[in-house]
Length: 391
Figure 1 (cartoon, rainbow, N blue to C red):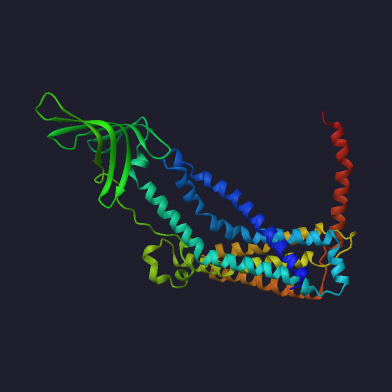
Figure 2 (cartoon, rainbow, N blue to C red):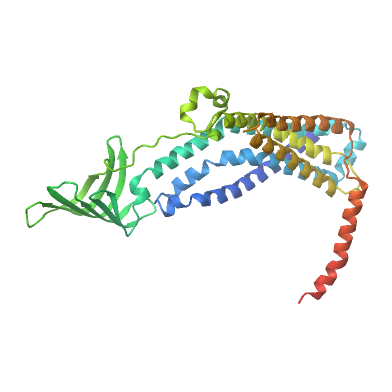
């Protein structure tokens, strides 16, 4: 790869990284807002919130990377075309495949990234997110007890808190325990924290008092304390058995599903469809690169517009990915439909090889170009009049 190839490789890869990071961050924010109840309702810290929602980022990168690569390649080819660099390199006798090599190299890098994420990173992150979220939601005190309410943790055991701080600390605690018929226990404390260890779940209270009122006695016994541990192990939620979904399987678990059926909640049909989707996922970045280069890689003069070629490339990419989604969804119940993504990829690579090797310029038919030109002329003609009539 010469100097020109290295320049194209660096520029395209840099554009891909910027686009992928920007779009992933935007998508992550929209997804994270769905779990904002972790802080507002369940009193979890901002670090727990970011940790759980951040584990979805590998899946977002896996989905966004092929499209980000398409946009980066289209941007780079448009830049080379607008600066007449494609024409100069073609006039100098550079074969189409020489110019295509750096774009292909970027496509291979992105394909390897998608392969690693889909095989291991994304399933691992989704499992960790599910385990973490399940543990938080299984915490009875964090999940049920709300500030300002008297909450029955179980029969004859009531808990009240005045406030819950962002770090999970509880303020203004009142506990009324009537479980022992021989004694009523009332605990008041200024603040407390939930502590979980191998011995169980405890509410560690600070600066309060314990009132013990035995049956048959008139006056209670009051004991002041600086620190007091109230055992909640008996009322904590029982551990929930986690069953992972099909997206949370590693690739080798999809290949040999019989060994892990007890841990998963999906069906064999879903496993088969997911397996084929994982196998084809790394091929889409290469296919998108081939499509974009086939439409925009040929040299054009300044009078030959590239807008229609860009629209054609986008349409072909959407059609190919839509065919993949259709095959995966329909393949759950109709296994023959799983061939659709493979057929689409094969046709893309074969036609792309022919177009790139021969330097064919893909242009829409004349009647389509003429129709679009006429429509744009009408819009241009009527737009000043509409603007003039507006108040």
